[in-house]
Length: 253
Ligand SMILES: NC(=O)c1ccc[n+]([C@@H]2O[C@H](COP(=O)([O-])OP(=O)(O)OC[C@H]3O[C@@H](n4cnc5c(N)ncnc54)[C@H](O)[C@@H]3O)[C@@H](O)[C@H]2O)c1
Image (cartoon, rainbow, N blue to C red; front, side, top):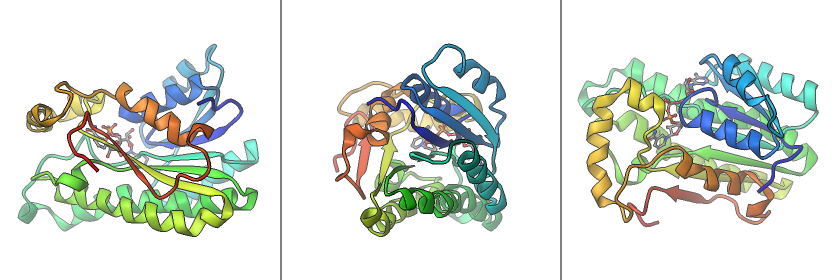
């Protein structure tokens, strides 16, 4: 699952689960562009000391097309190619569970802007570079929430459900150009951000641990193997449009 010499973009890669993805990809030898609104300069420094790969932080708002265009321009100027795109940025850890009839339209729009339009904009601007080279891997981060539903998270679950449709449709558009598009869907994961920002959500979501086949909490490291599989040559060139659900065997797909 080596990513030696590969150029990778990880959106939302400066904190939470994304920071664990960034570190794992650097360990596998990739040059990882961390695209986040959260400051990633200290993570950039930490990951660029002695690892096979290195990290470069580019402050990016995935919901702003100019910001995405600038990011992609920077990566292409500096490396001439983008091998892998990980669409991980989302509004999640800071979302308070809210009944469906109390969700402000402004918040609904913001969630869709970051979680859905953000992934679309990255695909829109990265996809043509991959297609021109006839190679590339896109991994969209979904969520088990969109399969099973989760009270109080209608905006979030709907945004992740739409990521499934985005993944399947893009797989069909890009398949003939050598680009594979898949989705990695985590179950409820104790990322440092969700534990810090949203203890209420942690309490509610943890109640589901008993319904897993493996009765324990899930941590970001539980996702690393699946992420590297989809991002690397290990998954080959014929797996596309699929969802890999990593949740300790809670849902069976
Ligand atoms: N933690 C879980 O239980 C869980 C479960 C299923 C799926 N997920 C998904 O995994 C991913 C990471 O989850 P997390 O727990 O680390 O959540 P998080 O909310 O802590 O992390 C999201 C990251 O996205 C960044 N971000 C937010 N808005 C952005 C913007 N406009 N532009 C660029 N970056 C932006 C944040 O700064 C952060 O680094 C998300 O896509 C989330 O939906 C998480």
